[in-house]
Length: 111
Image 1 (cartoon, helix red, strand yellow):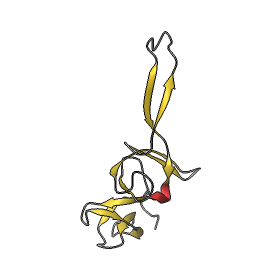
Image 2 (tube, rainbow, N blue to C red):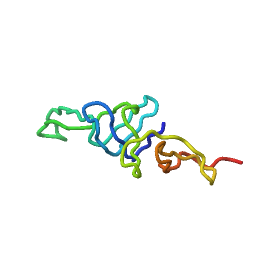
Image 3 (spheres, rainbow, N blue to C red):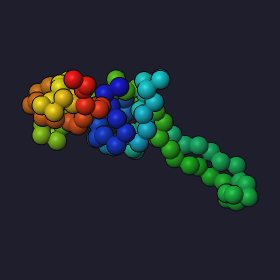
Image 4 (tube, helix red, strand yellow):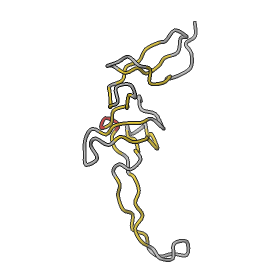
């Protein structure tokens, strides 16, 4: 999966389209991500000892990873991402438009 935890992404579809926010959690087995402040729902809580008043708790729900683009700070928008091996032999993510590095993907390649 190209998107990682703590990446900044731009949501491209749904009610929150156009929102730029940080990724809180990645679920690669189901191809979903949880983005800060996106796809919020209310969880209704009954009064209990822990929460004596009860009420509504707002929380983020997962969205499909295909509904978000990695944010490129150089282009200042969400972009498609390619993979490239840099001079040191590490695989890194690169912006398809401006070819700027968006971070390393894994350990250095064995020679």
